[in-house]
Image (cartoon, rainbow, N blue to C red; front, side, top):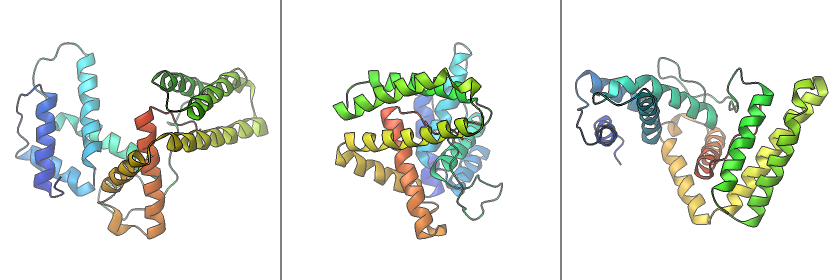
Length: 239
């Protein structure tokens, strides 16, 4: 897969064609400049695809499609997904200009989401992940145990304050790490190696601007994100 803007644009054009049921919408002129800008920002190709998917999903929810979608309509969603990816792997939110990459803590929960609502969403996601198929007795048993513990905690969260609430938030971080450790062990080493290569490709545009330790942290976070996505696991951490 090419990394030059022209190659990036060709990949986007091909993907857009698929999403438009084979109808070719050229990425040329201002559209080419827009997509080239995505490449210049370092937006990984698969992240751009996810942004395009998000726009199409919202468009389909409005009813029958009436016309082919131009790539320009997907810009806001692509940038939103890129911002989410950067936070997930521990990179600073992008500035309007392409500046130095800085490290920040990953944002695990969306701002404004209450703790009870977060727990409810996590339990539903864990239940769905468990129903998706067995990846080993240890992993399935842990999912069941975590889901039961979080379901019980939901009944207590509304009255939690101070140290009790802090203790629950700390427990969520521990459960999240336990689940990720079990998830990694449940996967074939070849799968983990493939996800690591994919994560490295995602970070390629930022590698030269990052210190070694910062890159290693970002790579680990990117692999974790891909494992979550592969197994449909929620982020249990609450911030």
